[in-house]
Length: 169
Image (cartoon, rainbow, N blue to C red; front, side):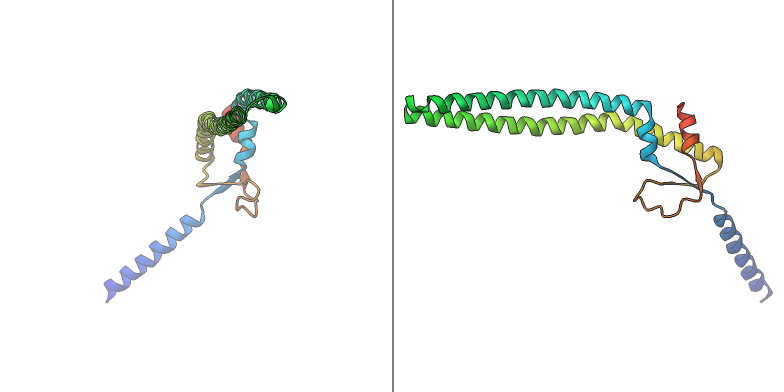
């Protein structure tokens, strides 16, 4: 019976000690979106993405202008052409319009792929810096403090300045 009491007391002490250690966990927060938006790499990636977007936009606008010009030309010439010729031209315009739509979809997909390609290494770099700063400052948990991200009260330590310092800006 004494041994059972000793085991129970030891178990209670173990649970109490574990709870005490867990209650001592340190928590910090950081607005990851703000961090990423201030990183120089992000600014250059966004500029590259915008340049690519402008290129696609210019190509599509050029195609749209060409389609509009052909439509105007075919409309003006329709009375002097045969019904068969007008139908061929209408089909040609439809195919041209369909190609423009496909080009828009392809451009959107390429932009998304390029964005993922450009932003992934930047996100990984930010995450590594956050982990390094959290470990150096002894934080067990770092919560994203982005508005609407689930953080209601932010009275803990904001480690954004330390992470920016770690990243060199």
